[in-house]
Amino acid sequence: MNGVLRNLEDIIDCSGIPARIEALLPRGVRGRQLSVRTLITGMALVLADGRPAHLTRVHAALTGLPLADQERLGVMQHREHDPHRLTYRQVEHTFRLITMALAKHLPDGAPSAQLQAACDALTEASIPAGHKNASSSLAVDWTDIETWSRPPPRGGTACADPEAHWGHRNTNLPGPKGEMFYGYYLSAAVMVADEHGPAVPELTRRMILTSCGHDPARALVPVLTRMPPAGTRLGDIVADSGYSHRDADAWAIPLRLAQAKLVQDLHPHDRGPRGTCNGAIIANGSPYCPVTPRPLLGLAPLPPAATAGQTAAHDAKTAELARYKLGRLTGDDPDGYYRAMCPAVAGKVRCPLRPDSMTLGRDRPEILTPPGHPPACCTQQTITIPPSAGAKTRQKHDYPGPAWRRSYARRTSAERAFATIKDPATTSIARGWCRQMGLTPLALWTACLLIVRNLRILAAWRNRQEENASRAARGIPPRTRKRRRATLLTLAAAPP
Image (tube, rainbow, N blue to C red):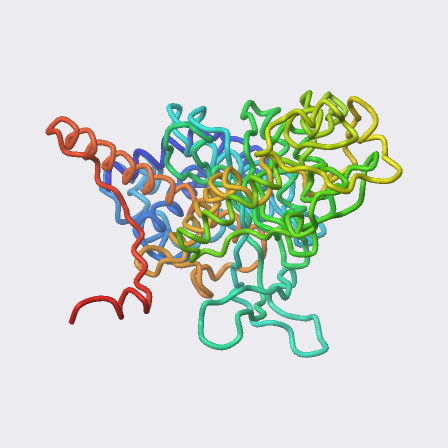
C-alpha cells in the first residue's frame, strides 16, 4: 500500500490541483485539519483498494494508514493536550466545501470551468513523462453513469439529483438492445498507438462528465481542443458514428481546426454520394469521377465476423473505387482548401475525354460513357475542393478501405477503458458505487477512479514489457494474444 500511496501523492502533487482548490475555499477562524490534498489522496486510496466511492470508506482508509503516514498527511495531529485523529464529520465538511467551490452557481448539467480544469489536470498528471509524447492519437467514446437518486415521478421534475437526466444506453442482455437510465454521460479520450508507431499503454488522458441532457460529442470537443494550447499535440481522433453523425460544426470542423486527423465510422445516413463539387461526386468525404459506378460508391464496412474470402473481395472493390477518386495534389491550406486532379490525368483510369489516358494499360478501368456535357472536373487540369465539400465525413483514409479498417480498429481501446471501470472485480461504476449526488462530486470521484485505472494499466504494461524482454533474451518470441472464434462450420468439421 505504501507504493500505491506514494504514486497517488506524486500524481496529485504534479497536477497542482490541491493548491488551486484551497485558494477557492473559505478560511475560518480555526484551520481545517483535513487538507484538500489529503482528501483527494484518501478518495484515490479507496478506489485503488476496489472499494466503492463512499466518504465513510475515505475516513476508514485515512485512519487505517500507518501512524507515520497519518502524521505526515495531517490525519493525526498533536494538539496542546492530546493527539486528535481525523473524524468523519471533518471528511464530510471538507468534501462539501470542495464541491461547493467547484460547482456552478446555477447548475445546468455541465461542469464548471474550475471542475473541468481539475479533472484535466488530474488525468494528465497520471500520464508518466516517458509516455506523454509516445503517441498523439486518441480513441474517444462515452458510457453511462447512473445516479444514486431515484428518477423524478412521471410528470414531475423534483428528485434528489436534479442535475441528472434521462439517457439511453445499449445493453448486451437478452431482449431489447437499449434501455433508458437516469444519470450522466462519461466521455473519455484514451491514448492509442500512432499508425506505424510503437505500442503504448492505453491510458485515459481526458474525461468529461455531463448530464444526459447535454450532447456528449459536443461536450467533448472543447476538452480536446484545449489540449494543443496546453502543449499536447492532437493526432488521430478515432471515433464511431455517434460522433461523426453530428453536424460538421459540432464535431469535425473544430477538431480539424485543432490540426486533428479524423478516423471515424460513418452513419448509414452519411454513407455514399452526398452532393457534388465542380461536377465531382462527393462520397464518404472524398471527390470521385462523375461516372463512378454507383455500387462502388455504396460500399459498406466489413462485418466483424467476415471471412478471409469476404475480406479479399471487399478489399478488391475498395481498390477499384480508389481508381475513380480524384488525385490529391496538395495538402489542406490554412483555410481547408486543397487541389485535386481528374483520375484519368492522374493515370488511374482510361477516359476518352483525356486522350493521353487512353494509352494506359488495359488493367485500368475505362470510362465507356463519359458525360455528354463535361463538368469542370473533366475539362480543367485541376480543381479546388473547398472545406465545405464533405466537411462532415472527410477523414484521414478512404472509407471503408483496408487502411481505414486497420486504423479504425484502434477504437476498441476506449471500450476496454470503460470495461475496466465497470468490472465488478475492481471498481464497478454501477448504480450505488457513489452515493454523493450531483455532477461535481461524481466528476471528482470519476477523475480519481481514472487515475487509479491508469496506474493499474501502467503496472500491467511494465510487467508485460519486462516479460517480453526476458523472453527475447532467452530466444523465445513474445507472447501474443490470438482471437479465437469457433463457428458452427468449424465445430461440424472437427473430428469426433
